[in-house]
Length: 418
View: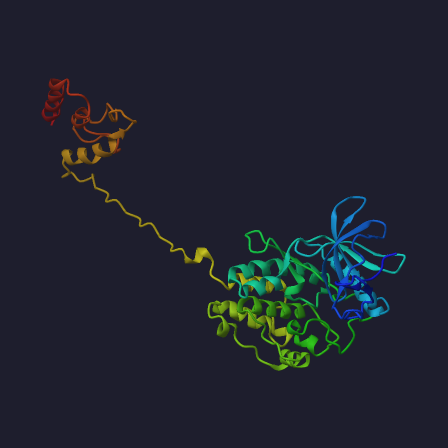
């Protein structure tokens, strides 16, 4: 039988109940010891180490004994086992996350209740850090990187919203990043513990009327007012707050008390992001402010619409490139139809392009000439205006100097025939 966590004294090693704060023998502060580690859960999952603690339960790394692959297991806090609402929320997390089948959403593999009444959810093991940890380290992220991360988040949420699943608790702690800071960083949206599935005959409203469920700094105004009917646009508001934080290093509303923070979500006007970080493009600022509008109808109506506006809000590398149009040079066309045109001019115009120089490595250029025997009629006028046809005299000049008398004789024949 598995037991819940207890506390122990680091000095004397004695164990005490979980509610104890100090060792009664020496006054040393007690530390929590986890009796789950090393145990086998439900005869198939061996718990190996502690990963973290959430509002509803602790998360452990474990190994499936029969298959051998590593998993993450969330175990509901013992103190919540007697709370039917908490138990139902835990079940709903498993159902909601299982329904969101997307690479950027955490995958649920199993859900169970042990013979000693321990509720657990088995999930894929994610080796990464939360967006919250990234922001604590880096404070403000580059706009291009922000949109790259938001793209993955929006695509995962789009799948959820199409299935009428509203996350209701989006915040940096519920966004894990694999390979953070690298070109291949990948997002995983987690913790659908208070997600609401809208469908006929669904379970009672376990989030309860007039109670704000979620993290105050990221709640939508409708959640802050405790409204019963929420839709996916509440998630868009939370994404807008996350965007604001990633680009400015702070959230727009964060009062000393939860009540005041909720009231700010309902009534207060947020400070313009560019007043905090002037490097934010104006178009991107407009997208953020639209996402955190007070009324749902004033926001983007889908996460894909939000994504499209984000991707259009920052200049792309291509937009900076100057488009160089190659000027078109029109060659002057000679009119050879005029009777006044001289044969020497015609021969020059036609002979130059007719001679093609073929160069081979380490060899003397080879001169190639056009070979056309029927260039002239007896009148001496051009028979063909093709640029490949040239006067015999110039054609012969391209050849080695031989047959001089023959060329002179051909010229006399032309002159005498006229």
